[in-house]
Every structure is written in structure tokens, then in C-alpha cells.
Length: 311
Image (cartoon, rainbow, N blue to C red; front, side, top):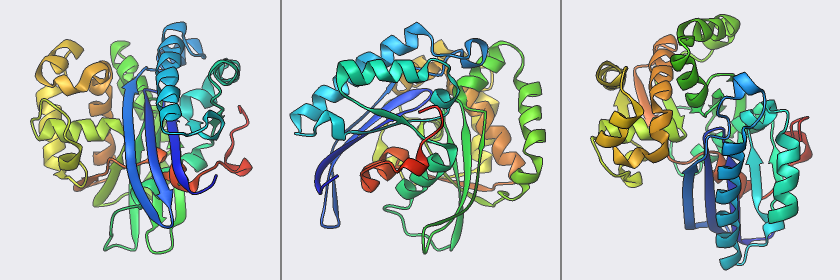
């Protein structure tokens, strides 16, 4: 991809994110960005495939995003569109994305968990100066959570893991009264790896933690500039958990209208963040609104080595 106006789309298990930006001669200028919750990974554990409701919602959002890219002169075949854990799992993912390419002209590439860690790290390191040479990043999606140790000086991924837990999955587990046993199983399966990511300070990306940050600020509307770079103590998460651990989607939406459709999955996300930070012995979280879509737009293309076998 040449310098100039670029676009990236991150098809997550819960939300679909758009970024259009000018990238040229070392200059990065945001033009337009958006995020829509379509719950592509909804009921994935039960059905092992995307459900029609989520596919229809995702297709509608992708159509809108494609038209917005058209207005900025970005060719649809040059949009860097990636899909993550839900697409790696769903049996009908490839057929669905073939339909998307045929009808919308967007080629969606399913990337590996290692690629997800790479691009999320590239995004979070983009505009932040770090005192520590090595930091730990947590990226909670709808169906998976990535933990990444990265060298901030030379951008080297030192280690990463991808666990099959996310806000959408956790919310479903809570509904089915399976959260505790499923979380314990994941923690047991990854017990040795998790110890390597124990850290006092954790850098967090993606919609779950940015939403919790905005809730901590007691905002009705999402104000990105206030959330980006926000630091939260473990006690702040504990307070949110104490106050909202049994809250319904309707009550979340009434108190925090900015959540929109995310009100359906924020409960699972809150439970997951609470248990993860205590498992990692974290004392402070730093939130970044940058993430995978920033990493892919900066990269400009997806190398073959980053593609999942499900592509």
C-alpha cells in the first residue's frame, strides 16, 4: 500500500472498528473512525459458527464503512480488514467472508493470535512514551484475551498468549452459570504462562477496558481524550465490580448511555477484568484507545505469515 489515505477495519468478536487516516512521510493524521457492536461471536461456543443475526448486522456495518472509504478515495480492495478469534473458531467464517468480498469488495483476512498480539502492540506503542523497557499489554476482545510482553525500545514481542475468554463469552457463561468453572479451567490450562505476565502495571486496549474507564469517570457519553492515557488503580476496578457485578444490561444502559449495544456484554467484561488483574497481581492499569486497527493501518498490509489456517 502506498503512502496517502488508508483505511483499516478490525472485525472483532464483539465490535467492528473503522479507521481512516493519512499516513505519509512519517505523518499520521486521523480522518475518520468509528465502532459498532455487532456481536459476531455471539453464542459461538454453543453453535461453533456465526449466527445469522450477527452476520446480518456485521454485513450492514461493513457496507456503511465501505461507502465511507469510497468517499475518501480508498479503494475497497486496499482496505486492510482483519478478523480475530471468533473468525478463527467459526466453521462458516470463510464462506461468510467470501460473500463479503464478492458483494462489498472487502477482503477480510483472518489473522493468527500472534499477529493479533503484534498489531495490538504496534498500535499501543504508536503514540506513547514508556519509561519501562518492557511492558505488559492486555487486549480483551469478545471471544479472546491476549497478554503480551513487549520491548518498548526496539518493538520486540518477547512473549504472548491468547486465551479463549472474552467479554461476549464471559457474559454468556454468566447467563449459563458456567463462568466460575470455565474461568478456572482457562486459568488452570494457562497457569504456567500466566505467571510470566504478572505485573504491577498493565497497559490495556480494546472496548471493554475503555468502557470501564469511562464508567470510572462517571460519564454518560464516551470522551476518548479523557480515557486515552487514563490510569486506574486496582481499587477502582474493585469498586466497579462491587457496584455493578450483578447489573442488568438495561440498568447499565440507563446509567451509562454511551455503552449502547455494549451494555449486553459489559458485565462479562467487568467480571473478566476483575479476575484477570487479581490473577496477574496488577496494581495499576493504563488505558489506551489505540489498538489493532492502528497497528494494521500503520503496517499497510498483512503478510502471509500472519494469516490463520482458517483464511
